[in-house]
Image 1: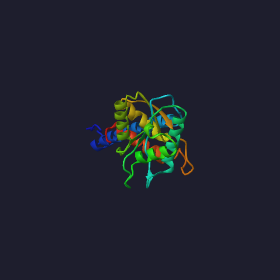
Image 2: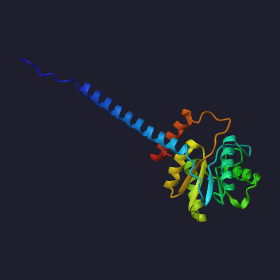
Image 3: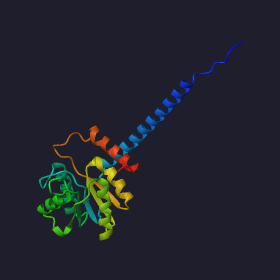
Image 4: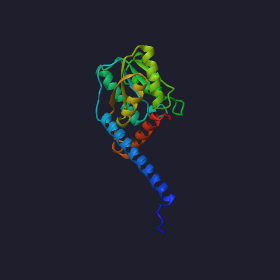
Length: 206
């Protein structure tokens, strides 16, 4: 008497598991590629145009002095200010752990470069990009600012744009130039950081 062949139950479960893993990997790769393309797009274009304010996202400061990267952001923002892009500057960033804030250091640096104190608003409490964007939105509402040019690193621009837009801001992005101490801007580290950080924000994990 012939017996019908039936596959082992365990083999069917393995195939299902592998199919799920494949779909997850394909989805993750597709998502990562899409975010990468957006990062590269924003990193390579300067949208600076007449606006109500220029917001400089903070970076490291050392004992009251901006790091080379932060200085490059501030110098780029000052150049935009001198070209009449906006009459107001906003420096962002909280306590760096040494009794100075990134926003406060940015304000002092710009004043030292000749920007009038009354033309600068220093935000000195935000601890990350998400919080900085929220505080910029609050400053914009309080001061009737309708359009803002945001300045940061090229790889940072896409995430900033999306978070600011989610907070109701009309923003233009203007990446600062590279500085000599930097590594290759196409290095995997900064881009991977942005992909993961943007994904975490979209998943409401930060």
